[in-house]
Every structure is written in structure tokens, then in C-alpha cells.
Amino acid sequence: MKKILALAVSGIVLFTACTELNKALSQAGAMSGAGSGALTAAEIVQGLKEALNQGTNKGVAKASATDGFFKNPLIFIPFPPAAQKVKNFCLNLGLKGQVDKFELTLNRAAEDAAKEAGPIFLNAIKTMTVQDGLGILRGADTSATNYLRTKCTADMITKFKPKVQAATQKVELTKHWTPLASAYNKIPTNQPVNPDLDQYVTDKGIDGVFKLVGQEEKNIRTNPAARGTQILQKVFGSKENPHNK
Image (cartoon, rainbow, N blue to C red; front, side):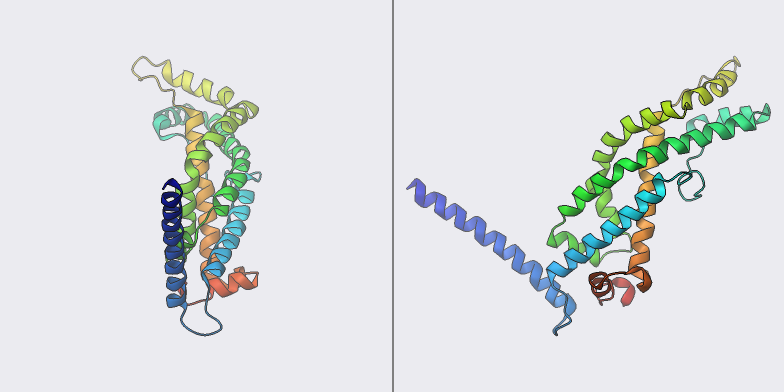
């Protein structure tokens, strides 16, 4: 009786899995239409994985390069909003050079930590399913990047924070922050300020990497010249790509 029950359960599981796969394949076929040029579900997933690999590799390389954050207005990390009063106070005292050095070290720490993103992205890309792929291809111009945000943010925080802490020590972030904060906090009428700089750099660093990956994804979707392989040309040149409609 137990064997019969086990076989029955296995059969139901297998039937359900096959039904879901057939449904996904049917959706892909319906989207692409009849003909030899129609996209298969496997091609959609392959093309999206290749696009994500290309986008994340380029995005991480840009973010982790020297001045990747510091000289890119899109992802430059400014003075922490919680300490904006400190910045204004120090600028009024003529301490612009010290303020600039502090902002430089914030960005250097993020550039160093950004190197951790590559393996996390790779693992998430490997686990993409057919259903994921169909939804991403039909989505907005940063749908794949948004998919990675959902899959990777928690792991990135875990990996980034220790790297940021090491990087802030390496670039002597505290050395540049302490004199500014001390000057501000010495004024009796000022409420003492001491933001969590490691958490701030971690959050801004992760956000910056995703912004660059999103740029790369949008470029692949909208710019035929950015599709350097046949599978990218086929998937993103198809009518399923919203930009081709």
C-alpha cells in the first residue's frame, strides 16, 4: 500500500512539473509565433542569462574601478544626509579640503567593496527559470536588473558590509570623518552627529552597482550594436522585446 501511495505521489509531482513546463513552452511559442525563427523557452532563458552576465560583468567592472563611484555622477556617494549639517558647518569654517577628502574616502570604500558583487550575481543568474525568463523579457527595460535586486540584495548586504568595514579602515575613513564631526559636536547648541558610515557606504554601494547593471541591460535591449552574440541578437531583436513593438 505504501509503495502504491508513493508511486501515486511521484506521478502527481511529475505530471505537475511537466504541465508547468509545457505551459511555459506554450507561452513562449504563442509570444513568438509560428515559423523557423520562433524563440524557444530555452533560447529566451539562454539569451537573458547571457545578457545578465554581460551586464553584471560590465557594471561591476565599472563600479570597482578607481573613480568608478567617485567620478560617476550617477552613483557618486555624497556626504551622508544625516550629517549634512556637519558638512555645511565645516564648509563655513573653510574646511572644504577636509570635506572633499572625506567624500573621496566614502567612494573609495564603495569601489573596493563592489568587487564582491560578481559571484553573487553569477549564482542568481544560474538559478533563473523559464517562468522568470518569460516575465523578464516581456517586462520593462530594467526587468532583469530588478530580478537580480530581488534575488541578490540580502546576500550583497552580507558580503558587502565586511568589505566596506575593511575598506573604510584601508582608506582611513574615520581619520577624515572624526575631525569634521568633532568640530561640529563641540558647539553646545549642536546635537551630536555620528552616522553609521559603514552601513551608509554599504547601502549606497549596492544601489550604485545595480544602477550600472541597469544601464547595461537597457543598452542591450535598445541598442542592436550592444548585442554581440547571435543569441542576444535573436532574443532582444524579437518582437517579444517591448522596444521592438
